[in-house]
Each structure stands twice: as structure tokens, then as C-alpha cells.
Image (cartoon, rainbow, N blue to C red):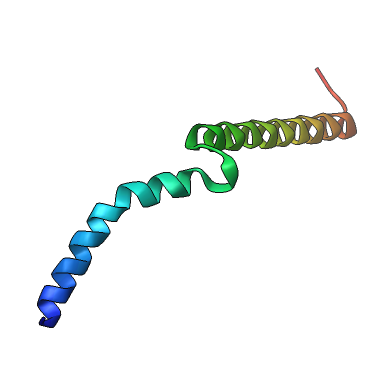
Length: 70
């Protein structure tokens, strides 16, 4: 068996194994892909909320220091 035949056979077998490997990877730690997306979305929303509250607090302190002159 030449190296070209070996490489072609290896690539073919890897392509056949790709779907089961991806399904196995998606169920990492017992969670499905849908659950991982939900978890990531939850943390994204929490971090966005924390950043927004930080920004509002910083703006409020800045206007309080400068005094509101209308």
C-alpha cells in the first residue's frame, strides 16, 4: 500500500467518522448543543446587564460631580 492510498483511505474513514464524533462532542459533559447555547446566552445577557449597569452608574456619578446645570 502506497502512502497515497493510505492517505486516501484515512481521509475516507475520517469523513465517515465525522458525524458521530461531532455528536459526541456536542454532548460534552452531558449537555446537548441546545443546552450549551442556552447557557452561553444566559451568561452573555448577564454580562451585558452588568456592563450596562456599570456604565449607567459611571454616567450618574459624572453628572453628579459636575452638577446638572440647566
